[in-house]
Length: 235
View (cartoon, rainbow, N blue to C red):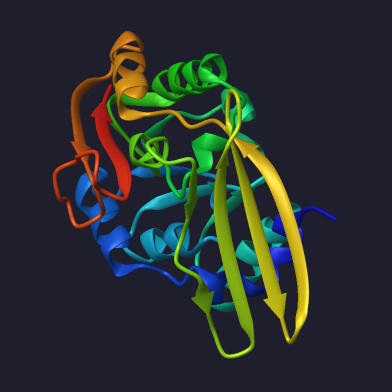
């Protein structure tokens, strides 16, 4: 069983819907447009945007998470298309979109810069003219300045969730530890630590325009000290 499958029942407790994220996406995506959420998790953002009148397709390769999105949409009577394609399969979508977003550090799960470049190019091709792409990744320039990096521990009533980065040769080892009612499960997976200085030239080479960078979903300017690297760009 994959760790994300194990995490699914507790995902919304650990990562509750963030109003600043929703406000940022809603402000930058074309109003009422056709939108693709790549790496949708349990669908909180996709569902929130669908409620605002966007036509949303949420794609999430973890089957249990995708099913969670479907159940939420059914329970709230929200029209939402749910797929199980991974980032590497975005080119299989037959439609084009007014907006595509990939947030939550999803892109770091690709193996290397070549795969990231391919994903960005496919994303560009799947956008309609003047379509908007939004990308969010951990600020790895900040992380790479340290030998190891731990996030604050997330504690809820019956669970504890720890996240830790360890530098490896070409990537970062991401170790997560979930403790629920005293039972602990850990998992380690490699992430590719793409930085702002690597991603911006790739976006330009893919012919994106009007590229803007932010350090969080409050629209603060990006710097080496901000927690995230967020980009908005147009086709």
